[in-house]
Length: 384
Image (cartoon, rainbow, N blue to C red; front, side, top):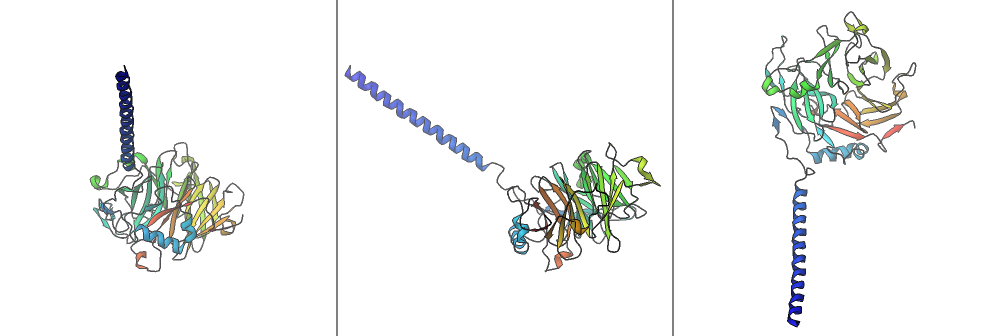
């Protein structure tokens, strides 16, 4: 009996240690699996893209990331402090500044695909948190204008879209209600017009295979302004503006119909008539609406740019977007173009990293779209 009890105790001990061993093996296995799966999570950096994709450059034209950050923090420390480093990507590299696929300009519109080395970025649009679009034109007018498509969530270059004109394309905007991208162009009479292309056509387009420009779906000639410097869509209206040194700036609103197109009863002699207009500060390059604010970007020459923030009082009689009416003014690097206020951030495009401006050693060449937090601290002159 004693031997039996002794053997039973030994068996219990063996079972105990076997159980401990099994638990340890399971724990080690779980830890190993967790550690390996962690390494495979998408939080790690994506592999760099090729320097060229379908003849369009994807790398920064001026600086590696570390140098860009250092220069921005040294020259504009308050701007740098208010960048959103938590939400990636912090920057969007502007593609095509070194070279871009494009169609060579010929008056009949029969140009062949080629490579442009002088593209100048002008317009900015965000499509459904899916794409970020940058418009650009050839400084020498040798090539037709283009749209560069980037992945909004990663910042990676997707493709180049060729347009069928050499226009400045200084204003582009996305109508999220009707899934339509509007592009500011010039008609044959050298008047301002806007043309649109649906999102589904943007996604289907393949320049490498098609070797021809994308087709616009709708186009409308405008009675005012004579030229277009900037444009945005907001609550079923297109806001279109222009400035010159002599007459200052003007902003016009065009109310669209339920289909998101220009109203036929608001036409005269084939030209769309605006429903509202305001005078603005001169040198405006971009406009955007963000909640209850209006954002305007101003830039001219190699002086510092400004971001002007106004409370939206466009419904107020005799209200104008003059510099004196701005609630906040933020100083930014030179050559700022279009801006977008979205989800508590302000996206900003600059043209200072083009081939022409890269020759100026005194400029900070902004070869990336940057985004500032709307609730910035320590960098604004404010009336509040």
